[in-house]
Structure formats: structure tokens, C-alpha cells
Image (cartoon, rainbow, N blue to C red; front, side, top):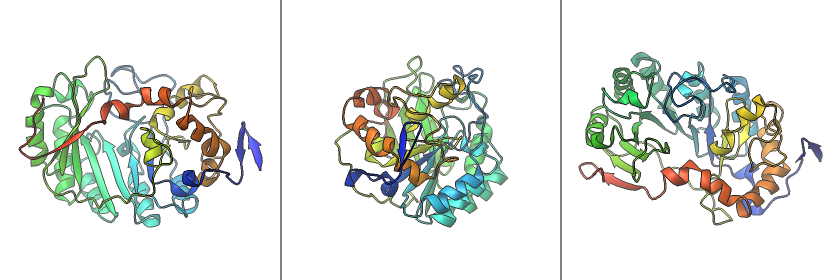
Length: 353
């Protein structure tokens, strides 16, 4: 047993239902901190303006990813890997195709999902990408459309609406499985039907309408799913149940978050404060992580099993979720404010109430 940065590494002594080193089901991965867009409420910029000064631009290292997928996760059954874009857009990663290929080579049972603004690359690239992803167990690209041609740019700044539509059509025509996601805002709430019609013409599986967490521009809205056709994605297997009743999706869904610098976090919310902590030379990135060194959970210094078995993951974090800090965490989690109480609707049966 060794101790580094106030974290114990060695054989984990954990609750039987909380063996993170064996039972991680969902990976959330931020493949890059690069992005072409300047979305108004994104954490990486000042309300659609300049990039925040403490954000170090970086791509997730491909060789590190190969090691994680081939060696670190041998005993894991990973249901889904979602490239979610806390700090950047995964399609900006110059090796995103190779990153996806590594997943299918080592975990052929894993679904791949990528969130993107869709204004990156060209139709030829997206056609090739669709052909590659068809080799995966299941895949989904979620393209963001937040308005019509004359309003989309109001939120998704520095993106090209026409190019997005061309890329989506190229991807779906080549057999790719895609969704359109709309963040419901003041400028688009009266145009959701038109956006849905456009999404159907572009060949996507569903239109996902979600409320914004931008307090200055949000509208009261419950998340809705509008399906156009049967989802090509296979069902994601459920593995076990959480031992503690909690609204924490990280805990319930057995998630982890990997940032562009190779650091492993419980969720996107805890990961967001890490770059500023590094910039200001602070060890503690979050009130949820007292005394925690931001480098202690980095994959460049430790393998994934070692990280998930250390004393913070196996004991401290378990106590945090169960007890004193759960209210702090849940009160700031965007999943609780954006995705709770969603409902699903079929084509021709959705209203913008």
C-alpha cells in the first residue's frame, strides 16, 4: 500500500456494490479542449466571447487512450463511451477516427456516442466516418441545431448552419445513426416544429429538445424526445443497481469522466473546475474534493484500475455521495435541472407547451 498526494493506492477495500474498478458501465470522455464554436453558455469562453485564460488547449493523447482501452479496462464491461464536450468538440480532435477504432478493436460490445456542433469537417469526411462507425456495436452522433438558418447562430456562434445540414445529410445517407438536439431558448421556442421537420428530412432518428441552463436566455421547458424512426442503436445493457438511493447520475449509471488532460473524474461537474485549479496552482478543484490533488487521478501517472481503487474513489467519494455533500453536488448538477422529468413523443404528436 502506497500513499501519494494524500491518496492511498493499492488493493481497494470497498463496499461490494461499489467496486468501481470492475463495474464502470459508462465512460464520459472530453477528447479535446479545442472548439470552433463560441456558444453563449459554454464554460470554455466568456459568454460567447474570448476563451477563458486558464484553459490549456490540449487533445487527449492517442497512445494513452490505446493503453486505457487495451490494458486498463480488460476486466470492464463498458456499455457506452460518450464524447460529451465539456471543454471542446470531439470532432476537432485530429485523431478522432483512430480513437473510435481503438474502441471497436478492444471493446466490440461498446456503444459510441459523440456530441458535436456539426460545423466541423466536410460531407466527404462525415461519409467516411459513418462507414467506420457502422463497425461499432452501436453508435450515435448528436448534432446541435438551435434555430433555423437565420437564428441558429444566435446561440451556436461561429458555426455554419448550411454546412451543419450538409454534414448531417452526408452522415445519415452513408448509414450513420444520428440525432438532432435543440437547446430551447427564447429565439427558437416558437420554431421547434420547423426544426423537427428539418431534422426528419435530414434523416436523423430523433429530435431531442432540452431546456437550457443559461439563466439569462432560458425558457421554462421540459425535455422532449420526438422519434422519426426506430432507433438503430442496440439496447445498452444494465449492470447492477446502485447501493444508495440518490439522484446522482454518475453513481446510478456507473459513470466516469476523462478530461483532455487524461484526468479521471466522477462527472462533468467535478471536471469543470480542474483547469482553473491548475492555472492558479491550487490542489483543490472543488468543494467536493477536500485535500485532493488534481494530479492524483491522472492517467499519465496511474493506470485506470489503480485510480478507481484508490482511497478517494473507493471510500471518500462513496461517503460524499451518501452523506454530507450530496446536496451541494445535486444542487449544481445540470442533469438535475435539464433532463429530469423528460417525456417522449412520437412524430406528429409534439407541442411546444
